[in-house]
Image 1 (cartoon, one colour):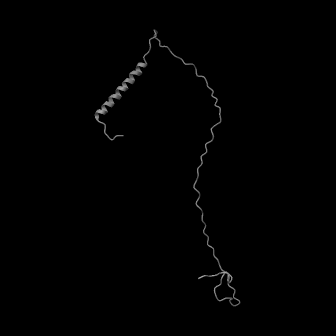
Image 2: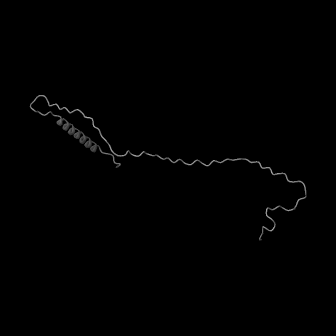
Image 3: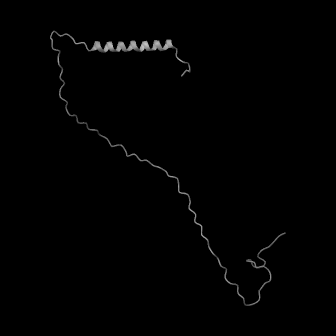
Length: 115
């Protein structure tokens, strides 16, 4: 669309053109409704035949059912927090210690250390 503003002259011309077109349509409608002279004073009456029932048979399979699938987002994973109290068993009191150094889970010689 252009951003120009219509002038008064163009508005008047458009209005008069629309009015003239309306008068033309009205004149044609009135001219189409004039009675035709057939020599008698009573216009002919037209009666339509009574309506008859109509039966239609449609062959073929019915349309398939419509399936709507909605994918929901997965539920977020649930987490459970539990507090566990661990109590170490009491150390045996009897007897002297077997070693004075830290204990190792590996037997001696199983681990080699390279510097």
